[in-house]
Length: 450
Image 1 (cartoon, helix red, strand yellow):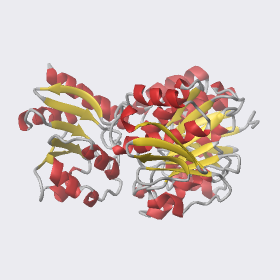
Image 2 (image 1 turned 120 degrees about the vertical axis):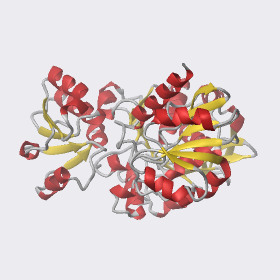
Image 3 (image 1 turned 90 degrees about the horizontal axis):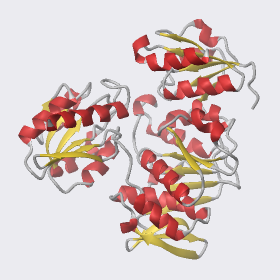
Image 4 (image 1 turned 90 degrees about the vertical axis):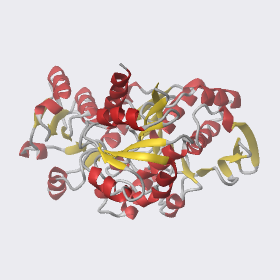
């Protein structure tokens, strides 16, 4: 798309906003970046804007924002924010950063969404395709913004794009070759007027522009996914841990199979997958569906699954001190993610829970917490909610910092226990993002060893 000379307002000056501004600049547009944060919160971004001679403002969204041909918004900006509401009232077109970047993508897009597992699946997809000889980039909510790498992607290459519902809210022409919905469970309801259906409908927009030359891959075990499917033209594959599927990938007797209209291939064993847990087997089946649709060799897929060691901040082993294992699961920003994390351990768990609440219903994990967790350390703005819900069942202690949790756990826990940071909440009440939260936790563990 030719955007030369177009005035583009970009809302948000963090990763995706910076990427969109740089891309707009390269393509000859006139970007203007607006962020309501204080200067010290975006100081690194400001240095980029000044180097690239990109106009910006901070601490306010001024009227200059609306003097534009269209607007690109970052996923962290709520749809009901004043700046986006005003733009809609003024009939200004609003696009997400992934929509904007997709206009300039010569390669093929694998767009991956879902409530849980997006990061791991995106990383495993990238690793597997690269190991099989297909140049593939990771972008979106993982690593770099799509805008940062899109011009590097050649026509015969792929980009595995971790795509959130917030990014899908503002798509118009975004068209992946492969769209994947891993699962849909209640999350971000604070952004969707407490409507689970609104959240589901946002997710399934991923298929909106696909046609008979593309593929939609969904979780056959997830009842919420296919009900709201709005594109009947796109060929569909599924994956399942429970049942054989006609087209796609499934697990049978611990073997991963790929089927396509009657043909059935035994690709590898679930034990070939280095990362453990049923949720990761499901993620691998989703990847397998893409890899075999591209006719990639079985042995290379198996070797890639075995050599993939997981992603940072997702049930990541940090250290062992005095016989206590410390795990960083900062990426667990909803209750369903915590359920998977708790299921991954047979040892007694001391759990760090809390942050910016998104409408969590802890009844989903109550029984599992009672069964496996010895004590909860509640943190962040939702600490009181966590305390009020769980204190009736198990000990709960409110803590100010992650370092406090680590230090206290060394007194509370016994050898053979696990301290697990799996907060079920967003990080923005105390940290820049979940990566920042995870790094602070790991630093606290490191200092505890000294």
